[in-house]
Length: 263
Ligand code: COA
Image (cartoon, rainbow, N blue to C red; front, side):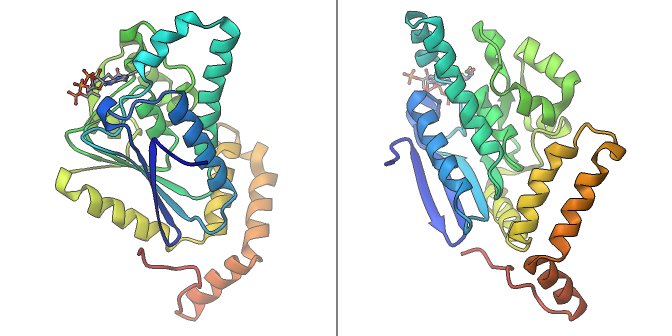
């Protein structure tokens, strides 16, 4: 499908996906959601894709759901509202489970669904002056579709404070609660993202995909409950071509075949 609200640039096995509605601070409406879902569905089927960098055009990463679009929903039936909200939930799920390493590059602000988008990324890099918030209750609505992913990242205690008050918070707080991983000066944002891209390209793609799939299966379980799953995962990977390539490369002081420099 042609993309009108996403700008996509492919450099080797790295895809740069930029939300591109800067006039409304990259707010999501049904068209953005459809495009992001279609793009994410393609990303699942692309074995050559190893890293995604999500960004936002203009001064702000994303202001979340498009308020004008949501206000319009009063004219829709309950069934239409549920269908539309489910499409949003499917978008977050599709992005959350992309087998490649997904990095968010945040400038300006990540609010509401924009902060939710950060929560479905693996690595979040932000400039130190960016503002975060689950501002929905200030608008009379609530953070719903994003809640499972955000709570996985920040935990119940921070969610109770921040979801209920809708308060905005700074990048340092976002890091403290686990929503972001690196807080840097604005002029270091691209260089820091590039360091993560380089790091990501030195990890085995099949090991990355399997590790990413393993995390939600293990999280929240007692070790004994997941012993069989974890044993199965390493048993399969260490005899796989990339497992053998990586182990032999270490022993012979060589470089595994998958290691690439960013383009
Ligand atoms: N939905 C729809 N339009 C939005 C929007 C949103 N979530 N966020 C911003 N816009 C629009 C504004 O209405 C404004 O439109 P206008 O030019 O027609 O007046 C335009 O984008 C620029 O917004 P502005 O507030 O002037 O930009 P800013 O750079 O000073 O501030 C934000 C950026 C993101 C901090 C600020 O727009 C904001 O707080 N937005 C609300 C975010 C929010 O609470 N999202 C949760 C939604 S559930």
